Length: 530
Image (tube, rainbow, N blue to C red):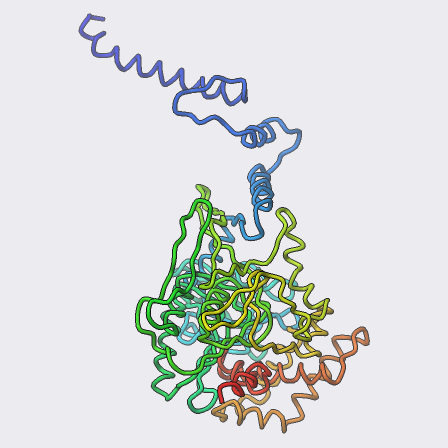
């Protein structure tokens, strides 16, 4: 080979030699663990990474190292606080759908009735309705997976219907006993934050929010503007069982009730400087009476909203002590598609209250059981059981409020004693009630669709003994003498069934319109406003 050729090929040969050496060097490092040489640009493995790698390469049996790693991460986060959590990639998709206000699927509401997936409702103009699915259809199979008669869970069935928009799912079903196959192309299905928005009576509006997602404020404003045009002067805002969500949407809703540049909330943490959120624009309902309903399921962003309105004496809070979550999480995405939600700060109400209830690091079980303890100690039944334990503060108007342990209501409304017994015994026959209501609806559908409002429907259902008789038969068949329902409990269940019948007619708004007719918190709110 000539000198000229050597000069041309020499750089290539040297590069090849270097790459080969680095490759075998890295392989050698992997087998030597912490005793191997360190290479420039390569981070040193942590002890946890070394252990997982040793388990993967040397352990006697095959082990899913990824699962072990997730367990280790979960254990680490559990030592911090109850709301710093690891979310695997599959769970993250569902969580993200809740927060962004939509998901991709077929748009069907179903219930497992006698181990059969039965269609209760269809999203209007959604993929399932467009493809021809009907209320009452019994779904047997989704693609190659059986969904009925196999004791499948609701979550498992739901996962078969969810998928990327444009993809299809083939459904085998029974309609009036005859087999049928329908192909449904998945699409985008909105997840509404507003369950109901209507006038309880002339001048008094009602809005129920089930969560705070990225679309909540927009939805809320659409309904608020409509109700104002219908003559609303006062509002009952229902935040019961609203577990929170996106903080910014709660702040924007608070802005609609608070004038000037009043402070709504501030957040602060070790690595996060204090950030103050204030009202920024004229609100749509800064005048008029405002009542906010809360209970033990109202948490996080719900408590931010309720706390700000209470501190400024803008609203009267009615109900029971809220959950008590005053920690703010930030979501960090990981390379495998999973994420961790890490607590980065605390939020404080305008007068400086932290609503976070006490917790012990590493003792998540006690924290999770705190709400059920309220059932056991009787707090749900009387206001005296909810003794404030936190630091007292003064509202802007001089009233005493408390920090720590959630938002204490201004007016306490106890849980119905019959309902309390169900929760205390952890036995509420939800599926049995759904079966009773749906069967009655299918039997009397032509008659029920003639009613235009909840009071008319309520009067008919109270006069029709068939619904009560059907419920009693189903209760007797379900319990087989193991659990005896009191008269009060049967009346409570009958009211629930009537609300579920209304839901079949008018979806979620129908349920709340019927339920509100006999709801003691609604009655108290109306008394106060009148």
